[in-house]
Length: 115
Image (cartoon, rainbow, N blue to C red; front, side, top):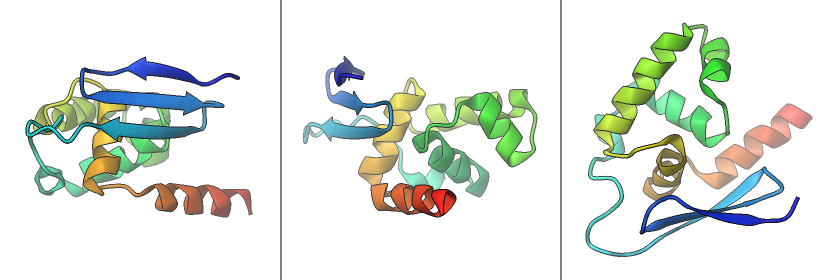
């Protein structure tokens, strides 16, 4: 599958290659994409953010966490409101930029799943 760039906002661009890896670029302008920090998220919300970065959709999140689909939707709404973002792609970029999730953490988990 060829690489394609998708514009998320004026400041954020994501490049997807083979549907697996993503590279994020955020300009160093004074107004950041997210106005909040990871400290405002609950433990459950932080867990959901980590799983979103790994690519899970809401139904997969519900199954993985043993909660209802609508509960996941509520969590996602709260998370996006807290960090002042509009969608899960922006959330994933924010989480990587803010250090909520590290790429090496994701890759190590994938490697452990394969082994």
